[in-house]
Length: 558
Image (cartoon, rainbow, N blue to C red):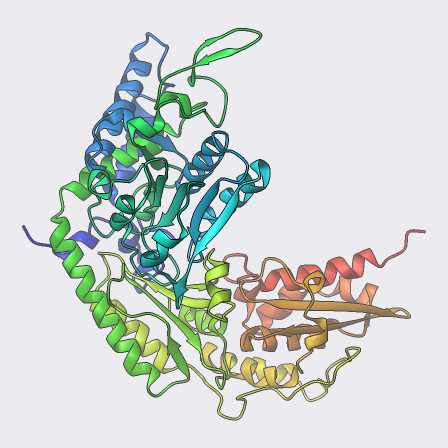
């Protein structure tokens, strides 16, 4: 067999819709698209045999139960588990990790240790933090080099108190693989290995027996399956005696008013009704993946990842950008940041790429400790899947090459310490923006306006943070007599420019003037309505709403 990316892509109906004709989808580490067979399987469940599973004698329930257990067997084959009873259905990897943390936590003693890495997704960090606090456990973290955990240091961290080692098999932020297959032989017999395989299952075949892991989790939507369904593999010996996390129907053998006997695994961990249509879609997804030449598919992705990094490296030689990743041992992720001398932020880059219908992701990617360890607040992440090709990479590079870096605005002048003062925006003319003939020129005008917004480090406090924004934005408000005064600070050039526009419209105005102004209509007249769209604003709408909330909260009732 071999792998044909173009033929593979034809199986995904999203790309065939007219509105997506120019779409370059490079946000696959967040979620992949779904092939038609997955969509059909979910529709088929609802249209032909929708019913709850187990404990019912009617035909539809039997069909639904049969489907669930068939897919459980498929999942066992997919991971090379020894038995389908080692497969538990969850809502996703996050739920699987919470299940493990809560269930295992009940079996641990105060002072027991859990080893993690600083590169973990929040889903493999926060649940362990919660149980550590609840049961007085100790969290320990592997040393790292540029964020990559150093497994060679693991033996020096182990003790007779080490009970769990929980590691991601690949970083969702930087793409590097972690050699989790080396870990289990290093661990004492009493120590369990938990693997978060969310970022590897789409890109290669994983064998839980070869990994020797006790538990492994993954989310179907990361490997071409439905959202809302995930897999938790548990080695039979590790599942035996593990207490359940949630209580309810189907996870019990017998219930009395004073106590309950729990079902055997896997059912003791599947309280309530599962997402049955999603399980049907997962089954179709597994059939779809197993019909591919997975080795050829992995080789194709490896070559494409190398090409992506080669082109981005070339780009960084002439533009104020820094590439954080390499193609080596990488699951198809590239991460960019702006150099300090750049006049734009990664959020600005994402806005620009979105205008070119190129989908990427900006932020800390639910790996905030990793980003902070690198001295960063976030990055622009490009993530590949098997339906991407060199044309997608070329479109990305061509768009990035046109980024409107402003040589005259390499850095904003420093601001005085102390109380914040308003910005001088007297030179701003809305007609300068309205008269621009294209969105590219309007974008450039916004970045020119950004120079007028002075830095205000004194307002960069947690209580002033605007929640819901993709980039960090801070807002403060004062009422001076009947008028409301605002100050905004952010590192995003586009948000700076849009904030200048908002301040021109709302700053130093009365409550009545602010609440009477139809900002949406003004933005439509200026050709900027997409920045107020919930699907395109990336949180800018939250800034406007917070300004309105501050104004309304200052109105005293009669």
